[in-house]
Length: 429
Image 1: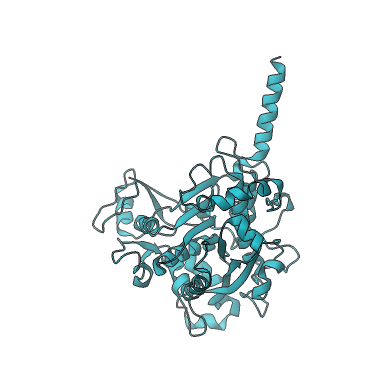
Image 2: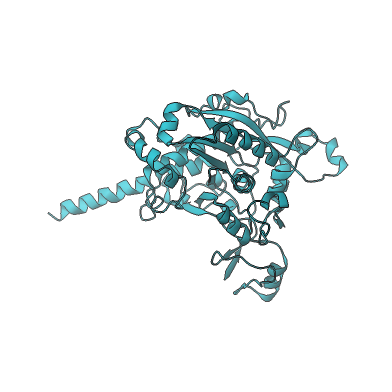
């Protein structure tokens, strides 16, 4: 068993670039139009010619076989679907009010019914059905309330639920799809929750259906707090997700249905918890899939095993140059077997005093699901960018749009390789 540790300093409190037309705020990064991505539209020649394939094999594209044979090289239909779900996350960012001076700070700028249209992400065929909010569970000292209100904002708009209603899109997909989209970190208290990196046991109400013995499944304290905390005026994110999923199942449960939960950064972690919670709560839940972008680690090895037992399918889109995907805590590289509470960690290669601290501290994580690994360094447009840009959602969508395979990481590289090969072939005549 191998263990490694990563420690990083986050240079800026941001996860996403807001369009330059909006008001500048301290969480904003500079936008560079050179890195814009071009999604594969549903009405393109590629997607149209393969629409029947998606409808027929939609469960494979949702991960029923862990995306075997679809990731390397990246299947074009899967690429288009990943980009589509990335657009739903983009809409969550576009809808959020980042301006601390605004009276509607930390809420959605748009009405529920207009989230997707006013976010300018194009026609989707989906209709938003519910706003989602997350509440910080950290107890703050009283003097914090005397500061600016944005510092102590406890509950904030985090995403939405949308149900596919367009008949043509349902036919293209082969089922009715339900999307839950989460944005990344935006408020001060969300950042504080992110820093609570120690692992904590899942509460009983999250594991009561998967099995009475959760095998020591643990998740990051801050992520769990944001998912399960509520207040007198705002129910927990967990409660809102369960309530809406129950309504969806009651309305559409007699037809082919899928739940796709997507998010970026903190949103990726919440997507993982929500997917596990849905499968644990609803015995009649259809296929639940997570498409995550730039997500941090969420839980320990036993949590990963519980995810797999619950049938949750997770596709993690990872930029190997993104530091956020390497935190929090330590990671173990071993098989998928569960660890008992009295099983010692084999941390070969670390100094004895470090090994002792690792064994005592609840900081040993495990990566979950299937990974699609990309790299900014392989992209001719992004290779010279800094650490922060490697984590932006726009960077992830650009990399997905250009990725070909591990042997030919980017489309521009592929064209150069083919051109060089063509010249060599001509020279051999």
